[in-house]
Length: 188
Image (cartoon, rainbow, N blue to C red):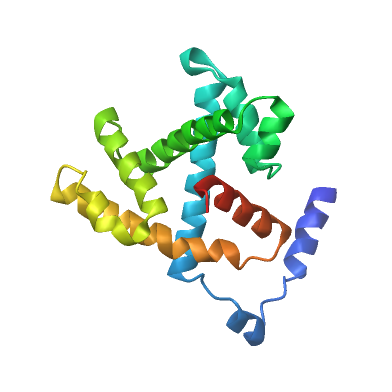
């Protein structure tokens, strides 16, 4: 009896529709915003992959994970981490380079559908060099074996660069945190 009365009540009370003004305010995100969201998800997956690689198995390196957390989560500089851990700043730099390479490996493997290790390593090298000197992308691309690989990388690089500014404009706490993490991760 209660169930029937609830169903009757639900049928009687119609949900209010959206007004014309509210409908006009709804809009699909721009293509650039979608690319930024995709890049965000890809970077999160890549960091998770790095964590998984170094948290167990043959490549286990808890020191690297501690450094990565200190850098990405706590925003500490290499000098602060070195002082805190009692190691040289160079050691922290090497660990961060190793972590970044693994993150970039996971990012590029996913974004460019690369699984073969030798091809992937060349792409990581090109990506790392392009981050340091973006104006010299064409020269960096000469490391890749085929025109098809170069074109796929150019397309990814274009999407990647177009998405980066979207991290800077989000003034929410989560947006600022993500922007800081991207900056720390990419070294810029």
